[in-house]
Amino acid sequence: MNQPQERRVALVTGASRGIGRAIALGLAAAGFDLALNDIARQRAALGEVCAEAAAHGSATHAVTADVSRRKEVQAMVADTIAAMDRIDALVNNAGILIPSRVETLDEADWDAVMDVNAKGTFLVTQAVLPHMRARKYGRIVNIASIGGKHGAPEQAHYSASKAAVMGFTRVLAQEVGADGITANCLCPGIIVTDMGRTNLDDPETHAQWLRITALRRLGQPEDVAGPAVFLASDAAAFVTGQTLNVCGGIVLS
Ligand code: NAP
Image 1: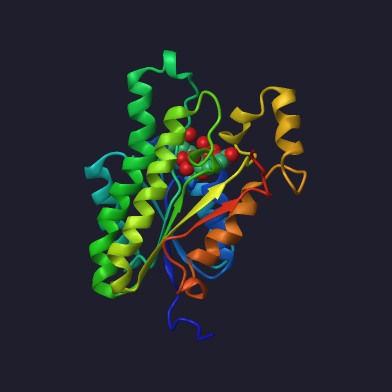
Image 2: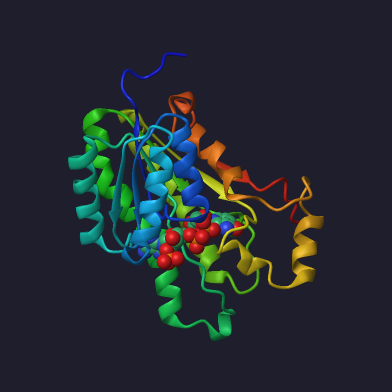
């Protein structure tokens, strides 16, 4: 397969820790240059991930923004293009989980989860699209969740937000394909991160997850990096509108 003439540039949101950090380092190891985003309060941690990626030989640019705020997103994309010249791949990874049962779910928490997970994916994608269309090239990788397919108690709003990401991606792929842009989703299972541990507080629940996972282990952030790098690469040129579970073979009846 032909290698690109120049190094590809990827923008990864929520990259200061967890799955976003692992994807950023996976992309760095695969030869991408990187613009790494997180919310302003994570500036220091984001700087550390940039340093780790630079050790792989990647040019890096840290850019803080709240992905749920249009103005910040537009400034982030403009700043990234000014600093890195282009955005070849976008990984919409930033996300939040605020557990609550439906009866007691605060309207503000519903809005916060939908704003970051669903609207954030839309806003960053919308800001990047004119640039990708002009260059007739783009790889968009949206991090949804198996929670968006099946869900678990206390995660109705999270599940709804991730189902929205999957629907958004399927239609996006149809709208942008003619301009050489692909859009796909990954659905991680239980991945051991600060967020993932929310699903593991109770030892019985922990054991149950292991029982229904074919590989009999929980996921590590690095487990999500390989599929994300693939979908962000030229190797995935004919893959679009798809949703891939990255869950160790969780069988939910
Ligand atoms: P994490 O450890 O909580 O990391 C998420 C990062 O995103 C944090 O640095 C967070 O900053 C940042 N962030 C939150 N709101 C943001 C915003 N508005 N703008 C920019 N950055 C923001 O989560 P993770 O487990 O790595 O999850 C990453 C993605 O994978 C999420 O979309 C999540 O829904 C998805 N996922 C995770 C799992 C799992 O088991 N871990 C499973 C399926 C899907 P703060 O912490 O300061 O808010």
